[in-house]
Length: 248
Image 1 (cartoon, rainbow, N blue to C red):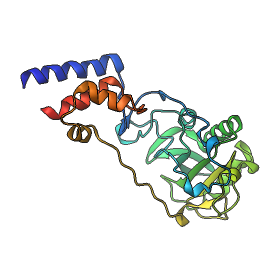
Image 2 (cartoon, helix red, strand yellow; image 1 turned 180 degrees about the horizontal axis):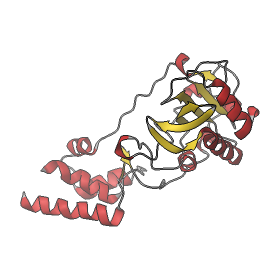
Image 3 (cartoon, rainbow, N blue to C red; image 1 turned 120 degrees about the vertical axis):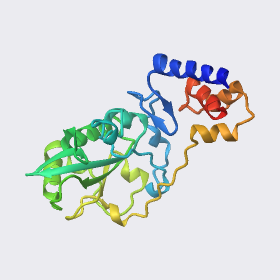
Image 4 (cartoon, one colour; image 1 turned 180 degrees about the vertical axis):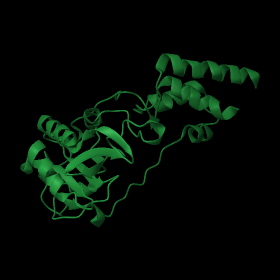
């Protein structure tokens, strides 16, 4: 047992000093993606309904400030989109027509215009893609952000960039479009978030669970299984920690 603890301490030191950040399926605090996939939607047939496509997204997309109680992301919006994220979760505080980005009380040093500009720049560069964006009010209770949203679209984006229908588009219809999933009152700007039958079930093999189901597998074999089959979320150091932690 003392030998195992010593070895684990050394490995943790490697993570801290040589890697600095952690990247695994259930957690990633690296400053930028290791891999980019900005045009993955190009291979989807035009006739495919968007409802038949699994869309990777981020929770509180713009929450990069505020410490452990507010930070949800470490990648910029541009990096998230280039990495393949196509669903954005955007929360705005409404004060006198201004829409600032918030996660609860934590101001994220950005406003809705920055989000629109970032999405438009990405779609102009990659017209094969589409972006879905849930938009809702947070840390204010005006229940009246529609007019401000319209003003921001007019000043920071283009109306023809938006998908103007409650109907689910095909992939061909959605290319180059921002689809607003409207989680606020007012006339239609896109699809109503509350009307969608949302399935966000997901399964992540936590490091302890992986070690349990691979209990009899050697470290080198497990590394080969995880890294040699196209799993790009594990670094070799993380795999070593996967193997060692449960044994104590």
